[in-house]
Length: 124
Image (cartoon, rainbow, N blue to C red; front, side, top):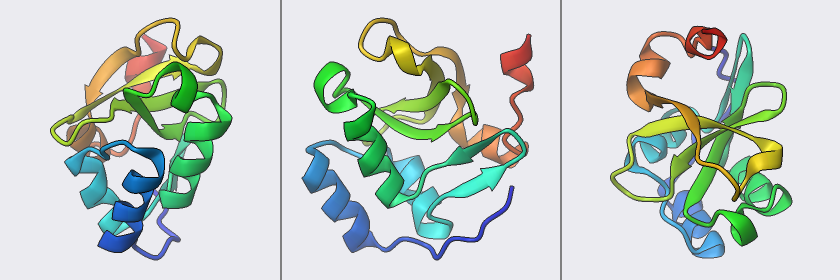
């Protein structure tokens, strides 16, 4: 995973939560405080600004306000988490299915990052 981002600070994360009227999961807050986004072999994990942009652009605010997009597979799938403080898993959701179906291929976020952000489970 390539980290070229300056870590976020607590104020940026608090401002994001207030702006979107959602909770950022604690595990993703910790990630943002360490790296504020990252690129890896087959995708990207969003920084604070990208989370806000994608929440609105992809229609999460209107169609799936209970979810937050934390990244993308460099294709048609968003990596999403429940917009709850205690959420610790993410899933994949096709961009055209936001608000229609539930995320698939649920994975524990911390374990997935520790294993190098591999999408091998997606190819099964």
